[in-house]
Image (cartoon, rainbow, N blue to C red; front, top):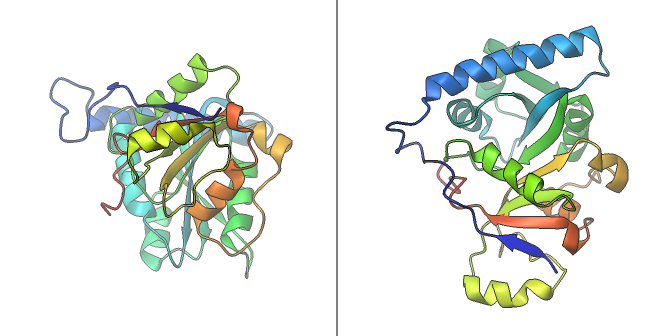
Length: 243
């Protein structure tokens, strides 16, 4: 049975910060956490840190990396690092990454590499114990990453947690949860995948086809047995279509 869970109200949106942890606190924690991960990586390229690597794919068709990074930094407690998988990012994004070097990792492919090849390179270069791959939606709930991580802690048999927003009636979707086949990206928008760094060794990397990041994510998710993946509702966590 495909696991499905609604998101609990474990945080606040960016508009509801009163009394909560400030974006400035998250940014400071992020920079401290990234500096730790970077130092460990420089000391021993085989080292990992007990945090999360967040990979943002960017190509000529879909590039919201700057906005996504800005949302991450104000809504995510440490420890984590950010990697932009650049398969044709805009000049603006590349300038931004250059200005933030030492804080944002810029993963570039070789000439002619498709998005999948660069994302695979980012996965291999990541230093976190867990890895998140985002589609094109920025997080808009404080501690969105903590919400996702809690699902791993509650479900030890799960190999991947993914955030998806079904556009069809939720009741109908629940009736259909016995089906192991995933719906197409057009009927079930996918915002992110969260998995342990050991998973790619089990199921393989992205296949090097010319697809959008979201379509690649759907294809990759299909490799996981239905009982080993857990869906949570994306709409409380991600600002789908808002950038």
